[in-house]
Image 1 (spheres, rainbow, N blue to C red):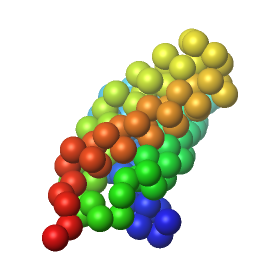
Image 2: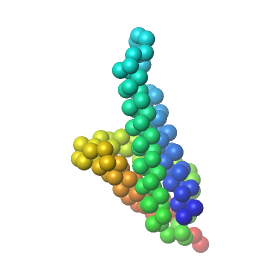
Image 3: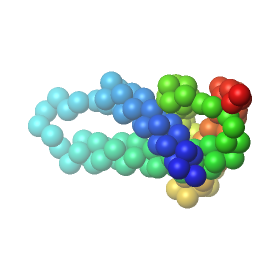
Image 4: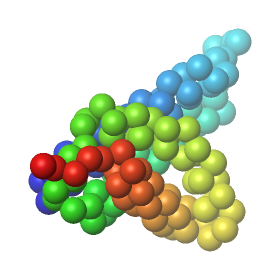
Length: 129
């Protein structure tokens, strides 16, 4: 279980890093003094990024827990997999929100991240000798 937690943490941090970088690069800065509307949009984006990271972490725990213990998987490969998952994660959140609301968006992201962690971990790992 400890191995799955460490792998999931690396996966979620890499995904969060990509999402945070994307938000920093694309978020519109105010042209005038900071207004309440801009501040509320900022907090909305912070909350979305945090919820994506939590859902990704929860799903990745399940996905990596299902991998056999004999599979070796480096932290570098897990980080690359998490970063690649972080790119479409916001789109998955929007899809889930349109499908079934806030709770549905969280569940969709957890399930898809579990599948990505399991399949990606299986494809990128090696058998131990």
